[in-house]
Image 1 (cartoon, helix red, strand yellow):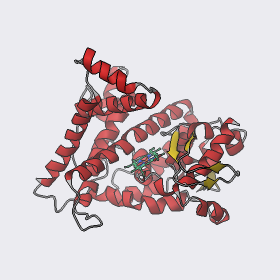
Image 2 (cartoon, rainbow, N blue to C red):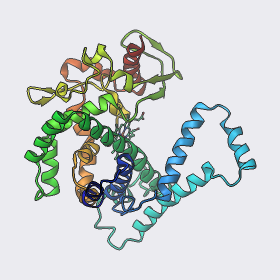
Image 3 (cartoon, rainbow, N blue to C red):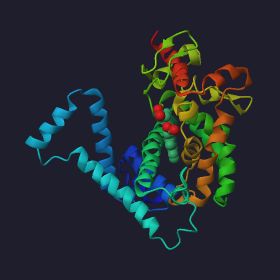
Length: 361
Ligand code: HEM
């Protein structure tokens, strides 16, 4: 990525679309890490058909959320503009891609030796002792890409945006990178080194405080609940909260809430612990982001897609993410009441909405 794209563009003095490159980078990386398959998005000038269909489907889903007459509008499009692609077309392209990935793996003579995420799921049995069928595996493939690609690409884009605006932060980060990492490291050493890069974590957390990749979130309550501020929630209530607004809230982050200041995440050189309710960038409770630790590793990885951690090395990080999450993000003992409070889905939402209410109070 560095040689082929950035250096070439810098030497020629041409502009590049950094955001677009990062979307290709995370797509290539997650497909490689998760399924051991080379997609080659970065090598292509144009977008891959999978990425086009995937993005178009996401846009259309978002439109369906806000436009109550979407069914009529889509039907009208089918009749009067039959040349336009429809949701069915996009879904077909995306499904075919996922099925191909699964099919290739089934026919892979070395599949027993592989240990990437897909292989592990292929060797897993469900609660009835059956292996997962093609549809379940397809859904796992897509879930992994949907959850990881856009979120991570956005977070890295915003990181570079803020670094460009704050050369002094860039300098400190670079010093830590040069101090902690060298090109001779094995993937395991690299992993251990990244875990210790406190300033890199602080920069990244600060980016996600300002620009959470999931800026608005929503849930339906499963059961009645009472939130910490006394608000009563009824089963079936629709609740929405806004990590974007909450991250800029002085009541939560202090008078300098709007400043980009990674140092706020460090206390005596250690990373500050915040509860999932205070900083819901990865959601919380039982539905917390499963990829948090892998994503942190990916975002701190300064190499290119070709240098991405090999699947066998990367998967344990993914599996570790739960444990790591509890170490880094769960409230400490002083907050045990809150920890108990976040065991059920509604209750997590309750706590977050409580903050959200503050944001707009
Ligand atoms: C900066 C990067 C990321 C951010 C900010 C982020 C954030 C989030 C958030 C807010 C949710 C909760 C969504 C909801 O149900 O309301 C979530 C869920 C999830 N994330 Fe991430 N994510 C990131 C990267 C990743 C990566 C790299 C992976 C996988 C490799 C991943 C896997 C998942 C999965 C599987 C869920 C669903 C968990 C569940 O519902 O049980 N995420 N993420």
